[in-house]
Image (cartoon, rainbow, N blue to C red):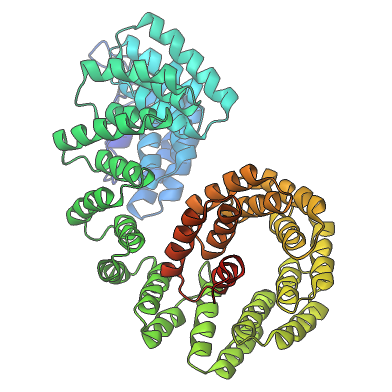
Length: 574
């Protein structure tokens, strides 16, 4: 018996091909004496050894039995051994069916290398190279495809380059630039160049290329989205919003275009308009938890609590993002003075991002209701249930005690916690803040210095110590050095900016003090910042402006002791 067979024998064996049919393989006929002869046509014959035929037969039997791992393994092995494009194609199809990227890459490479005139093979290999992150090799395959007038994917390839490091992305851009010289009118390549430039933060170079694509393809959604992103990246927010507004009206069914527009509206703090866009998106896909979450948060931030409540309840119905939904529903109930409903929602939150905040809110709500003992009992149980997070629960309990002005008990609790969790930074910081309440500035400084010995760039400790020295001692220059370091680390933190203003005031630098305090108040109109800003304005001879700041802050925080004390001290009024 001749040991060579053609693929025709495999199909004629009576087996049912359970996956995709094989294509592109030439066959030969066999005489009764088991010798192969050339087929009648002029097509070439691709013979198989007996071992290969047997392996492929086993593969097909395994497929019929659902043992697809055997099927794929055999096809990949034989594709590698025979370098046969038909076997490689079949191995590629099976890999795709099973979602096996490594097999798909191996098979498509063999297929393309041995069937170089087949655009389908080259495209498959280009796609798999791209998925594997071998984007420069993929681009070269795309170029081959371009030469054969095949369907290229230069745009998709460039989009996938977002995960490359900068050196590899620059190399890919060089490849695109080279191909663009040969095919200057190819819009896919232009879009790819623009995308790669955008990913490299070369937005000003990318924008003209995006515009060229849009001028020829005004309905190219990818290019429209890219232009919107480029305008935003170039800080041309109004142009971006105006452009996207027109495009959304022109392409109302483009979800991605509308989503970008909505997100840029949020960045521009145009929440009512952003809310409208998310409402439209949610109406189209009511069970999309990401969209529902965005709409819920926008409604909450806009203080539309009833609407936010409705959206968060819908989000809960999707059984996704349950913790965040319960958290915000609890906060809304708290805002609406429904403590029991708030506690109920906070109790539903599982271990994760919102667990500590939930316990803290439950404890503080119980304390407000006169159930401080119950609050502390729950926190003790939490320490036992989650020993890894015991320090956080000690801190929450100390805050419960502080809310009742039981500062000495809070300090004793934190002393006990620090015996078990030595040098724990957050426990040290919490104890320092309690020491401030007890007017124990030396103890506060000792704990904050301990934190800074462990973590010299701890901005919170630097700011707290600097502010306390500026506010409660005459060590102003030392205070400024500490606050300046915190400011260098976190220049946009309103608390640190407020401290910079306050220490400048203590040093007598009124213009600098006003500059920092106005910046802090604009970013965070808190009653303590208002007290500081008002005092500096008053001392600067701007009494009416100071009174306006104080009165405005008192409307938001009518019980603010710091503003009331400052006003009594400076105005002489009770």
